[in-house]
Length: 125
Image 1 (tube, rainbow, N blue to C red):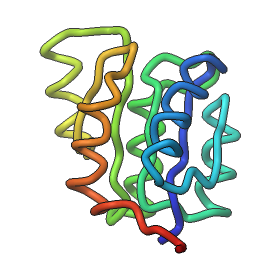
Image 2 (tube, one colour):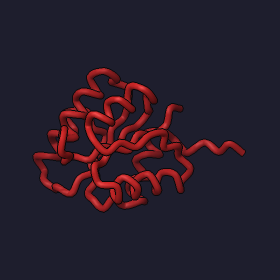
Image 3 (tube, rainbow, N blue to C red):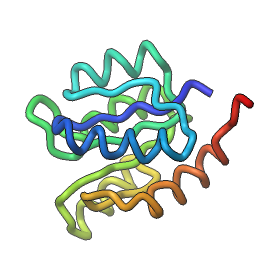
Image 4 (cartoon, rainbow, N blue to C red):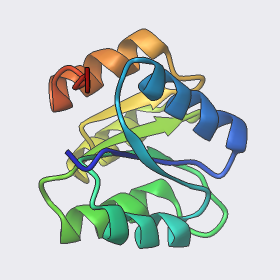
């Protein structure tokens, strides 16, 4: 497993999602604060799963999703956003997202979906 890439321009949101995942035993192999940084890390670490903020200053999450999904169709994507609208959810799902979560992200709903996608976290013990 190549781990999880967490993308959000707000450090508090990025750290919140990464903390939920790490505390559950998942490997967060990268964190990005911009679209450009996310693309660079995505190509380097080749994650199994990416969590994406929808609104970022340099590139929106929907465009980022399309770029990443276009180069790596087997990677799973979860959108995390404070914009709740049926059209956004529909567009995200049609663009290749596996799920959309409202901020602040609920640990239980995020972990349920991550477990469905990646399975239970692997323990090194």
